[in-house]
Image (cartoon, rainbow, N blue to C red):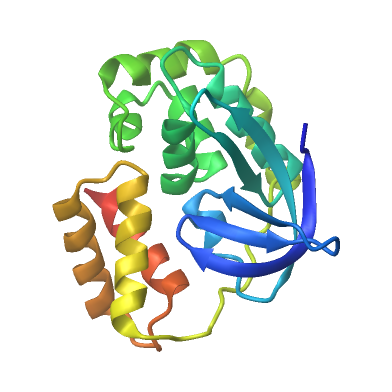
Length: 206
């Protein structure tokens, strides 16, 4: 079981990072997009990981705090929720928002998450309510870090952000519309991080 990885960010392609350890091993790790937005190329990172073995693949999911990883694992225990949906949830809403939606029986807010229908929203509320009461305390979760400022080719940035959103379950047209709106509202130099953050904000409002 791989529980923790420390190293340098060698490559970024939303929502995946490649972390190179001091032993010279590069680990490909999928992250929630809001966490992905907080890392940058060549940065030293410590990621709490969840290792998932399937018939066709071995996957690593990374989180900026132990508590965030535990929330991911709680989501995986809900009937009908797989890794892709759990990652989409943690990319679209914060842990504190998830806590609020579940505790307030807010099915509508949960169904705005890609891939979450009414039945899944109901299961999330029923199966998680007793398990996530403590999530109202935000002290154990990863703090917000400064966003990366490295800019690059605009076409590449847009393509990577779109690929990241589609990987989370958003439809092509949804992703493209959110990116277009986000891009028009960004005054600073365009980066993967600021475009992802603004696009997710637009999608959450729909």
